[in-house]
Length: 273
Image (cartoon, rainbow, N blue to C red; front, side, top):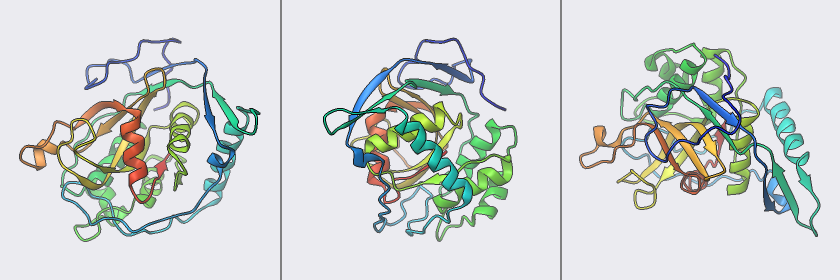
């Protein structure tokens, strides 16, 4: 199922659980400017070793490389054109003006069925949005998800495309938090795709989470730059898997900085959109 635009300038939902929100998508336009160095759009293919797999996460800690395709190259060229089309000169600093301040999708919720199934559950959530849900067992078989290595995030786009017939791509590593934020705006606001990312969660710094998680694959379904928030549809409810854990499952809105910092702390620094 595709995008159903709501009225321009719709009210942003409150930070927190927004599971009672009746709309599947809300959208609007408002300009904002953000200074970035010209180098922010340069691809720097860097990778560093991942931390050991933590309970309740479910991503593969091995630094595997994405196998790029013609689709990857085309979407990256389209992203660069979109971004560069909004750049203007500013004394040696490139200033981006992006007409995409907020976009809300409302994806179906599915809780992960095993403590290392965040990858299959994320694919299931996004595929279900497009009307093609497969079981987590089917998805995990395709992804090669198991207790030894969990899910290779660079394969998540392939799984979404296989089961939902879409044209998702993997991009990583993001070069900065600004690069990540632009790709969130592009993926949700221009490609009109509910997205996925992989985060390293610090329970001291991220709302609702109590414990640290070395890697967690999760859908992103909304962003709002008016209040600088990003909404997840988290398949992992920490309290269901860890005694004393936080209420993290479902539609949860976080300060954008908490999400971008968690993504940039992960060795992949990647998105699927």
